[in-house]
Each structure stands twice: as C-alpha cells, then as structure tokens.
Length: 240
Image (tube, rainbow, N blue to C red; front, side):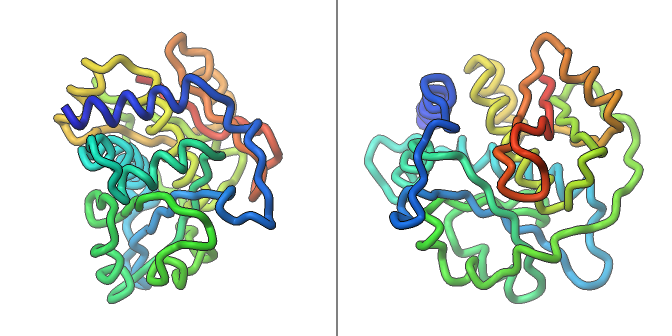
C-alpha cells in the first residue's frame, strides 16, 4: 500500500504542474531543491559507464518509490520528497570512493548494485555534510560498448551527440526513470518495482535517438540548461 501511495504522489506531482514555471530565488535557498546522486568511482577499475548510468537510473526511481515515500505520517523521508516535488526537479551527481562511499550509506536513500546511491532531496543549502563534501567534478568515465538491450525491460536512450559527462548523464537518466514511473499505470509500475526496476541505458547517435523519441509511449526529458547543455535540449528518452 505504501508503494502505491508513493507512486500516486509521484504521478500527481508530474501531471499537475510545470516545474519550469517554479520560481527559484537565490536569496531564499529553500526554493532551490535537489536530489543528490553519488556514484561509486574508485581510482582504479571503476565500473563501466553504462553500468553506472543504469544503477543511477534505478536508484532514483527506487528512492522515489521506496515505501518510506508513501508513509501515512509526515516523516523526514516524505517531507523531503514532497518539498522537492513542489520545486524544480533538480539532481546533482557527485563521486565517492573508499571510506567516503561507505560513509554515505548511512544517509537515507537507496543504493543499487554498489554503484550509485540516490538520496532524499533537500534544499541546496541543507545537504548532509558527508554528501556536500563530495566532488561534483571528476564524475566522468569513458564510453563503453554494451550489447543490445535485452527485450522486455524499459530502455533509456541518451543522445551521445551532447557529449555529457557521466555525472550529467546520470542525472538525466534519473529524470527519465522517474518520469517513466510517473507516466505508467500502477499495475505496470507494481510489476516493475517487484523486479527491482530492471532497465537498460544506451548512449546512441543522434539519428537513433531521434527515432526513439518518436516512439508512441516515449517519455522525453528536456534539460533546463543549467550545466553542460543548452536550455531545452532533449537529453534522454525513456521507452517502456
């Protein structure tokens, strides 16, 4: 039941309002909210880029649809998401290794595959100190060549022509998984959640990306353009 409530809250937030119209006032930091995503990036032998992006996308949707987000009482977890849903839906990707990665596991959120953890959103001036000290820069890893995605699971396509860093792409695929869950009906989302949100991420050339955007059930993500890409760039598309 709590999972269904979490999905209802997410769906209502995405359907009933335009986040782009939300005012953000630098003099009022509480109006600028963000979900932090931490990528596990050790110095040696980091995970392949595709695996990191898939873990980030799964962590975001799992955090949004965690039973804690559907609690009947106004807990800190519920309040964090409700306030975030009332502002622009920003995400910030950071990197961690060794003890720093282990330390942040105690902060409320969801970790997937030991590669990415998505946290309860907060105002940008109230980020947990253990997260705030992690670097936003240095989140890039080279592209890899994954096989074709398996049948039956959602695919989030990334426009490789935008040359986004892994950190930026992680935030974008997080938007994609979250908005896909909001768009889809509850029975579909329930099955997806029971399987722990399996999905594929594929970075593809622009022509392939444009074709995916034309899918009748495509969920298209347009970026506000604060970092790396121009405003209104279509960065990712999620296909159920």
